[in-house]
Image (cartoon, rainbow, N blue to C red):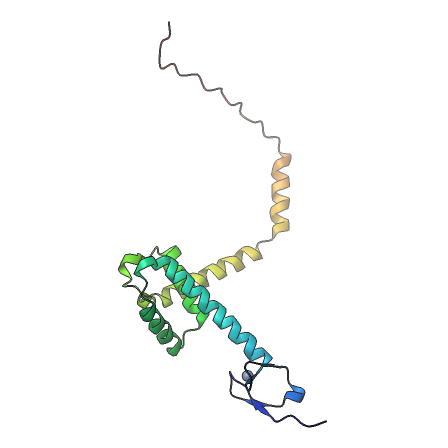
Length: 167
Ligand SMILES: [Zn+2]
């Protein structure tokens, strides 16, 4: 069997042997680690979702050229696609950022990354706290309190208000 020539991963640039590596072919002559290709398609997906979110938020004000430049700028600065997406979502849904004041782009996120990060961190911590609640104990407490016979207060029928005298 002829040996296959080693190839360079299209995404990470590492050389690998196709005989002992899980790989995909990305074009007629280009190959990539399977894991790198999967990671890349995840990135593309989030990128697409971010764009969709931004364009539904900005509507007619969206300036695609501006948006793309700003997106690239954030990536270059070391932000991950997830961070950009989550921060935009935070700005729109939690902070109710006004699209009319966005100048057709997402430059505002530059000022929001830290805040959004803190918000999601708090949320994650709250979730963890809730998880740590001993649900068995809560259930026990509840059933104990049910054992106490609580007489329901009779609900008084609301009197019909007479607005008009019919007679
Ligand atoms: Zn790779």
